[in-house]
Image 1: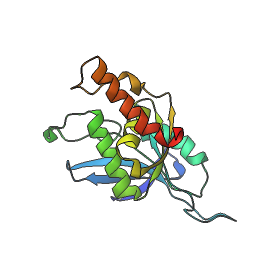
Image 2: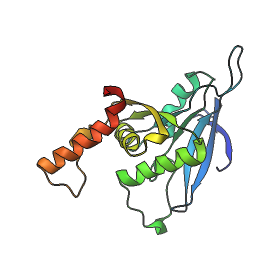
Image 3: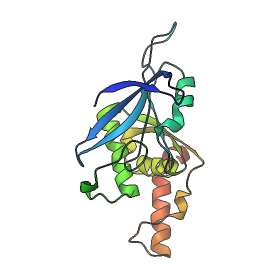
Image 4: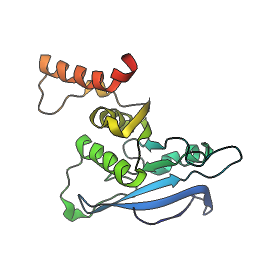
Length: 186
């Protein structure tokens, strides 16, 4: 977990209650920028008594997309958002040789939850973040307590690159969907 500091809004003021930080993703030697609103004590509540929320931004949009909603949410849970690698303030050096893909970004989110948040989260994904959140929940259910998808990229329209159109692709999609929604449908 890297250091953190208060962030400034576009007008030069401090965003109330939010801090920004950098997490060193050692698998690739890159710094991942993130925002966090830490739980605070309020009358009648227990700090951190509720599971954290992780907001996943859409393509080409950084974690700043969620500053307003993070500020409006209650103070009884930690709230996080980060920039996908190659977007926002999480740009690798030219020498990394990384290939950006949904697999890489899902791995980034799982590693972030394990090393920064350190407990299962509720995911809220917008656009590409919704698609990646669905993949994360299906591949790493131990890290995800629930998923909210809004304006999500239609994940049912994607096939793994090695699967051709036809029955094999349909089976793969059904398998992903059944794993993702099995707790809801059962």
